[in-house]
Length: 371
Image (tube, rainbow, N blue to C red; front, top):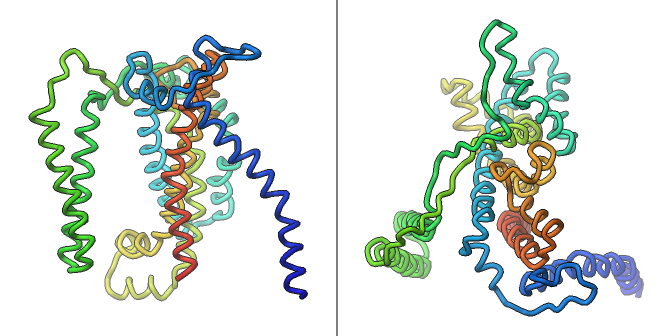
């Protein structure tokens, strides 16, 4: 009887939170998805009683194909570069700092606090600081003048130079090749391990499908003359990336330092007895043993890289297309152009991208707990 009473009390206590979460989180998400499937904003604007029509996935199709939304596609490319460089920079620099502190240098507590301090700042504060440092007529550009050298002329936040350019029309082919390579290595691994023949058959069929698709797209697809849409990495994004890495490398440093301090001392001593140098110990022993920490850092930093609207807003503003991001375009589309349907479509795409990192990680954690 007491167990039943405790069960009822627990439901009563949790129910208000569940209801509020359902309304103000998942309810609004569903509403955003619905708005993204309408034409709200095309002529309706901010009318009191707007006429809204259901258009299905037309907004999503326009975002990826219409010539009007080329900026969205460039912003998606920017988001990939932001994710790639912020993630790799934070992990590498954070691990390097952790290794330095793991040597127990003099003043370790001071340096640990110093490296971790940027993580306590908001993106607005970080953006304001680094905007001053990257000012074209000040900051880093005038540092060489202190030793009688010419000033740097690099436009940190307004450069229009783009590198690593590619044609947007080639993306289906690139994706096909990428998936085919992954399937090939998965099949090769299953053959070597001689495991799970059913999986081997399924992956082999998928590989054949993508491989045939590759040849069809490469040799038989009609040529797209005058449809080249070039996108690439704008050098103005370098400033944003440096600021984000500066802020979050301290966080990864704290994660890696905790992991290094948690490794058994006997592991290090055994490596030294076998003649391993410190570098080999960290690269070949420490890093593999710190894989769970690395995975957590990858998920968290990847998620953060999709939420750098405030940093871009503070450093470069919203109208600088070179440093833009889908979240910035969502803000402009929704709150300046009053095009709520397309703004909601961009928001849903960002939610899907975020889910690609968080949901697999949650599944992984659940499986680890149930083992």
